[in-house]
Structures are given as C-alpha cells and as structure tokens.
Length: 195
Image (cartoon, helix red, strand yellow):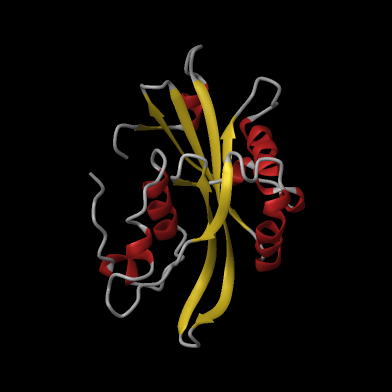
C-alpha cells in the first residue's frame, strides 16, 4: 500500500510516543438483491463520503479516554453512523490489518464487520441523524460489487474515485479475501492503478 508499511498488530501497539492510532471498519452484509432483475448484488458494503471529498471507511482516531482500539472504533462508529451502530460491536476478532505512514506518524488499523442486511440498512437509514453527519461525514455509499457488460461500469468505475490513505487498497484486499465477489471475477477486473 503506497507510502505505508504493513505492521503486525503487536508491533503497531508498541510504537513509541508521537504515534496516533486510527481505526476504520468495512461494514458488510449478504444482499440477495438483483440489479435490473439480473445482476446479483451478493453483498452490501458501506463506505462514506468524507468532509474532504474523498471516500473512506467509518471510524477515526482513538483517544486517550478509549480503553482499546476497538472501544475507540466503536465510539467513532456511533458518532459517524448514529444509534444503529449500537446494535453491533466491532471486536478484536474483526481486525484485518495495520499500516503505518511516517508523515504524519499515524497507524491505520482496519477491521471488517459482518452484519445482517437489516442491521446495515438501519445504519444507512439512521446515519443522517448521527452527530457527525454533514460535518465529518457527508453521506454513506454502497460499493457496487459487480462489473457491467462494458467491463467498466460498477466496481471498476467506483475504484476511479479518490480515496483517503489506503482505503482503496483495503477495500480491494477485503473484497478479495472475504470472497465478496463472484468466484473468478476479481481476476477479470479492469482496475487501473492510481497515480
């Protein structure tokens, strides 16, 4: 992931003073829906439009008052997504990876959380009433996990957006590792590499 090095969680937690920790979560749920009655949606995956116009995952910086990375992440989810985020809790078992950048000295911890479609829909419906909606978070968006016949529409076009930090790479890695796409379709994706 460009400009960032991957760390084991234990290594990340033992970095010296001056390092800040940010935690973000990819929330996803099985979705049996069909687009246009024929394209399987398979899963709903949430991302958010941030205040800076870039796409990212819900979450944020862990504060000293937070007892753990997960406590900080769950606090941030409540602030950004609203009351519906209280229906689930992101735990250490949901942890996926940590990446550190030297400027600024931030470690980004990434989690994935499987929800029911009802929980995910409740998050979408309640997010406009969240404390940070319209401020840090401009809105939620579902990631299109399909490719249209032209080979460009859907996920390939979505990936042309601007993402914060390594959110694009985290999305691609999670989608592949969690098996969220139809078998074999990841290898067929026409994905350009950002500059």
